[in-house]
Image (cartoon, chains in turn green, yellow):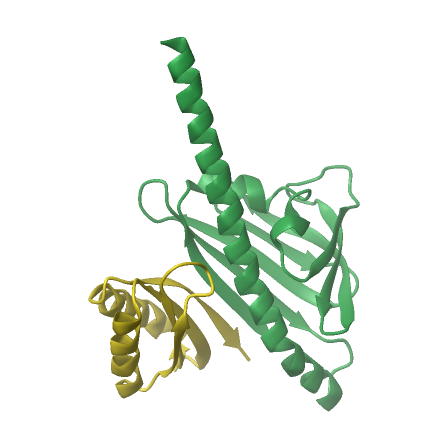
Length: 162
Length: 83
């Protein structure tokens, strides 16, 4: 099953990138994600590993994932090493001055193929889809709030300097 | 031929009249549309659902931007379920 969601954020790609690649922020905007723990020497970048859990209904699914693509500030992708088979990708593209088109893609398959796995995947799909949309809305809120805060701070500094 | 994926487009409008008018136009084009007060703040929202192939997505998106713009609104992203 593959799910994708897209939204525009009123901020430059570099600021959005700072949020989506910071493992300490992940739980603050990723809906349904209950664990995103660094388990590698480096906390981000190619080869960084995270132990993850996502709540889907009453169950929590996840496992160990590794960053397999890290093209700053445009693309970051991860894939599962153990646990549920999953791949994810953040795709950022400039969409005008100080505006970024953000896409989050997630694909997953439930262990144990056959009809039971197929049913489980399809039952989970609307929840995962809703989580992606909520994650992007919350990411946008936080990024745009941070941008407004930084701009206000810059204005205050300029006022003090003059 | 690319397989069509169920896609939900999220449209935002400043008022109910615009949201309902665009919603009616989209229904005529085959979209399944729900209109209601925006859950994200002021204004009204329409969620328009239709199956779209990957190579048709940009064209559908551009059409929705134009249509929503005619009522003072805009497209606020989408999500897709690819089986």
